[in-house]
Image (cartoon, rainbow over all chains, first blue to last red; front, side):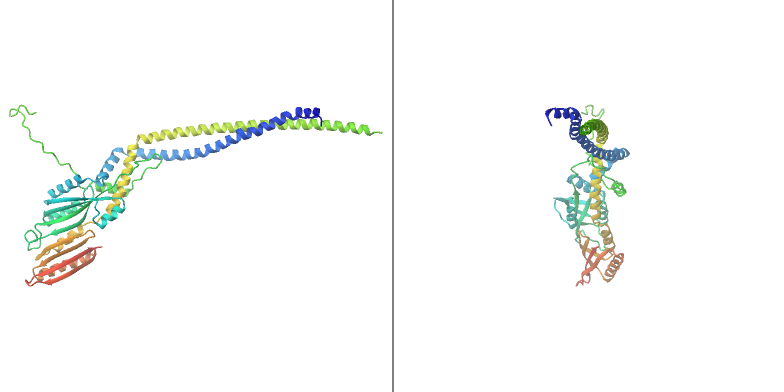
Length: 246
Length: 179
């Protein structure tokens, strides 16, 4: 084969050969990457459509709820189980209940964080922190019974962990067996638990509130709640007797 | 000699074959090029289509997320409700109630019985000591204990000690253990 033949062959088959090489190169540098990208985008589309379904369901769920009702329920539940210990609320509430039931509160003391009972130990294992309150009182048995029944239904939730009656002949039982007045000591455990660190996540579905939870919320509404003690404002005479009340 | 005639025919035949081959190669390369152009257009079009779909979906997702963000307060309330109800249910499940025990204690305070000491522990254990004036009062107390026992709510009801004092009254100690 001489140079003339080679030139002839190249002239005849050069263009098809160039096309062939171009197509091969095009496949490698254009079609294959594009196909790969299409496949990636397709799997992304699948994920996106799943996300759209989940988010649409979440939006639909949220639209059916009432913000006012949720706020009220969340507040009530936080009152029942506070995020932090609140001695003032508990002791004010117990004091109010004692007054209502003619129970004289002699002394009270706190043992923050002390795990006094088996029940408290169990709850501590479940992530609930406790505060122990010890109350010394003087009361009749009937009144004490009423107080105990009410203490079991207060917000923040409390649990009686122990009762001890110190009875003497002077203030103890009457001859008929009815207790007119006695002194005693009652240990109360109140609990608190920190709130979840993340209050909602866009990607996560909404937590469901079961009928049992709704029933619990309804039940808690009937519990005794903390009422801030009304401040006594001095009566200011206005009128002729006192023309400058301010 | 007629050898020369055959050689001319062979050369012509070869030329024809080369022309045919050249045409075939040309056609094939053209076809190959057209197919490549078609494939390129299809993939490019597909890519644009899938890309636009993805962008559309992304916009939809952004819109939905915005909607959820505008209601994030409600979501946080829901999370709090869910967390608190879970904890409160656990608390109530493990809570020990003293109401029944105190109600039963009331029935034990029969006429003639003088309660001296009473302790109620965290596990629902009631320990009481007292004095019964006479046999009638101790019989009445025992009848009440029997009534409570019939309710079968206590794991154990026991008299750890029962003795008659020189004064003539009865010293009683009683234990009630809740199940």
